[in-house]
Amino acid sequence: MRRIYESDALDRDDEDPFRPGASDREEPRAARTLPVGTLSETLFPRRLRHRSISVDVSTPRDVYEAGETVPFVVRMKNAMPFPVSVPTVSPVLWTWAVDGHREASHVPEIPTQEPSALEFDRGEWKEFRRNWNGMFQVSESEWTRAGPGEYTIHAGVNVESASAKGVRDETTIEIR
Image 1 (tube, rainbow, N blue to C red):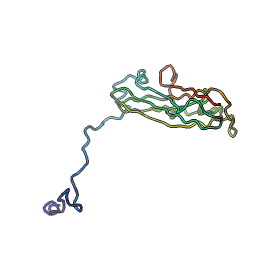
Image 2: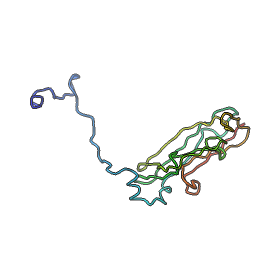
Image 3: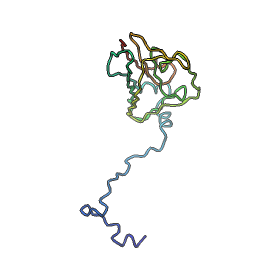
Image 4: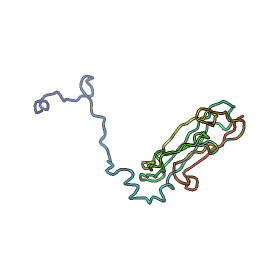
C-alpha cells in the first residue's frame, strides 16, 4: 500500500482527462440509526398517527366516454417533521374502490389478517398511479361494462374506519 501512496498513481488532476478528478461524493449528513417503526412508536402515539397522513385522489378529467380507461392518481403525504408508521389491517397497505367495490370487483376478496404498516419518512410524499378500465368484475371470469352515469373512485390507507380517521379520499367521474 505504501508504494501506491508514494507513487503518483493516485494523483488527481481535473485538467488531465486520464487522471481522476476531485471526488463528487458527499458524505452523509445524518444517518438513521433506528427504523421508522421504532421512531414512530417512540415519538407518536399509535391512535394519532393517521392524523399526520393526508390522502388525495384525482383524475385528469371529470367526464369519460364509455369504454375509455380512467386513469387516477393517489397521493399520500406525511405532514410531520419526523417519520410515521401507520399500522394497517393486512399486508395490503392501501386500497382503491369504485362505488364501494374494491378494485371494481363484486367478487369478495378476503385478504389475510396479518397486520403490516405503511411507513413514511419525514415530509414524504407517496404517489400511486392506477387505471380503471370502466368495467366491474361480477364473477371469477366475467366482467361487465359500467353504464352511463356517475361513479365514485375511493382510495385510502388500509385501516379500520379509514373515512372517519381521514386517511381516505374520493373523486367522482361521469361516464357518458
